[in-house]
Image (cartoon, rainbow, N blue to C red; front, side, top):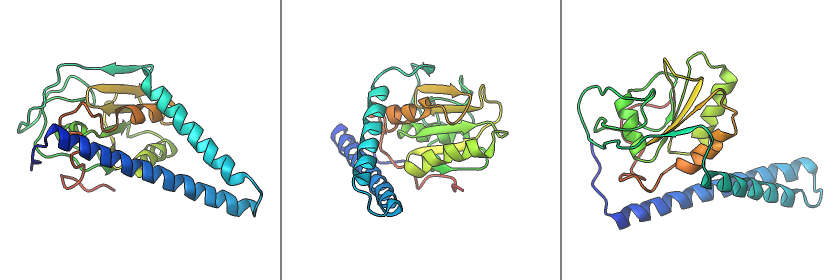
Length: 213
């Protein structure tokens, strides 16, 4: 399975549309929170405004943090984009890029490990891959799953032999975490999701292989 190559302008237009969709989804979540807050307080003046302002401030703070270096992130250069058959001996666990299968992994939440070579192709499309130790506590796993609920380009799966309980991976970048509630995780996702520098950023993270849970 392959995608028709896009021109630079077509990729830029696709990424712009995806980011608009994400912004609309973020606004819908904010409005929903505001509506619930308004109902619970039964008309207390100013509550909706406080919620909206609070969400806007959080988003602005997250954007500012994402624009700077993130403590603990490792970056890897010289990763090839070749499509290959069979298994690949990757330098990182989990892999952060390199040669990969021609078919990508559908983004979403999995309760079983996925194939490295498929997941790496998803990274090339701009996805974030959140892997966790199979023994990670259920409440921690739930926090990772929330990331996939909010973003259609997030892949979540257990992974044997990780160097830390949680590892966040984007193409060429990786962050090892002791817990899923580490504040750096949100920043990592915001910084590297749909990285426009990737040649296939914005290509589908669906219609590939795998059925998310």
